[in-house]
Image (tube, rainbow, N blue to C red):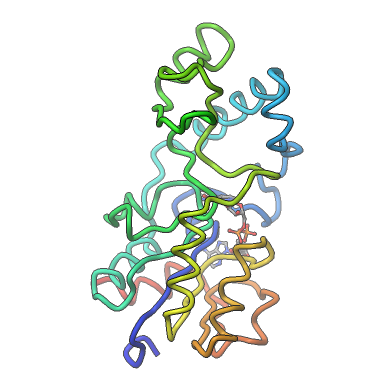
Length: 237
Ligand code: NAD
């Protein structure tokens, strides 16, 4: 199918990073489920919730420090360097597609990136080491260096608007592709999960690689219930 395709769209979820040592969201004993999520509005309004969000963020970062790209990430990077896959649309926030050698414009991040922070007022990027240094010294996250706005990890929280540019790019790639290749997503988080469904309706072939079934399995042209590393190591150049 890859050989027959003109344009392949890649699409990944948390399952591609489990072999890097980062647990996914929905599998049993997920550390991400331990706490009730802090909705975006509460983060904006309540300084205590902001402190709690940063405390959780640094705790999780410590758990997965040093995570490196898996065979799945490297397999996707090989497909992209082969020229048929222009970019990978990802729900992940861990930066491991970039760490596998992909350029920023080859990774379309639907839920943002947890490896740095941004000011919610002016958008300026801030590095986490600097935020953490202040957080540990004063018990609070610092204000934006440029405009004194509120800093937040550059991820999309519950209740926060989806990022416009990545959504636009994901829509364009989904509409243009003739093969849509999913790896490691339960396909239950919307609007992200709408992309594979749209690709199929638009005439593309749909392939899903996941260790368990998903709501889109019935619509897919090929479903591989297996470990991602095992499947994607075959594509490593
Ligand atoms: P999910 O946890 O809902 O689903 C992951 C799927 O991958 C599951 O169906 C699981 O069975 C499968 N899976 C796990 N490891 C696998 C492997 N090695 N081989 C084959 N299949 C495997 O993840 P989702 O659909 O991406 O949605 C979760 C949300 O949580 C996303 O919005 C994402 O942003 C966020 N999240 C991101 C990370 C990350 O960046 N690494 C981690 C946890 C959660």
